[in-house]
Length: 297
Image 1: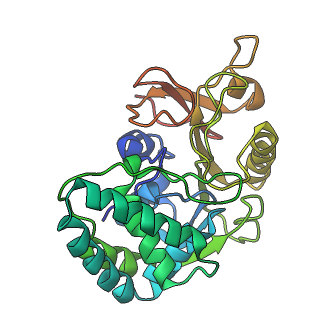
Image 2: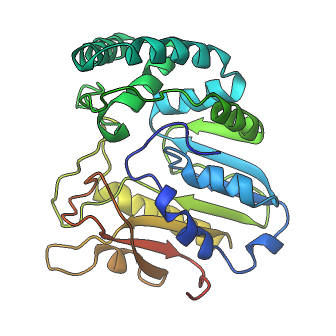
């Protein structure tokens, strides 16, 4: 099972490092609640559901309403989406490069013109995700998807068996859409684990973000509110792991070392093919922040 969408900042390449840094006794916990307030493409979600059978409650959330509706439709019944993507794939792959590009921009306009987030819009969303530049999702200030065409030639758009696997896995998942700040706060159990993957802060202060997951963006005020949420999680005796860039302030000091003073910060390298947070190098440093001491590696 793998994510059904490509998503900027996806964690597929980090799964091994994330797994290695789970609490040392995580698999001994009973009746675990797993919470992702920024689920995105869901790479970590898929991994956790496949590898940790002691997870009995799952809550996912994202600010992007189209993405969350895609999760809900796949949870309910992916058949209409599969049927639509089969037609799109057949038509698209029969076209030459010029025709594919024209189809892409016509469908992007149709997607942006739709006011109702229904099955048709979700099917267009998944088609565009597979044929746009690097599977990037970005909105302009008007809330319009504005990523250019980026895929040429014959290639698969639909992975039917994977959609059915995700459908099965989502049957016990609570799917929410909105602000990250209240997700999971009403849980009443001992073992709760949060994985937090917010939009990354630019590597340098006042750097520009290449991605906009929705029109509102995610600035330092949001980062500070997220830290307050982490303090709440810690105060409840729960566990969290948070991913972000190894961002610097204007004075050259680490932004997250300062913000998360008192927590455990590990630095790792990961290959990125999309410049999501103003990193000039292909293997920028990222931070994994936890409120527990992860196993040593």
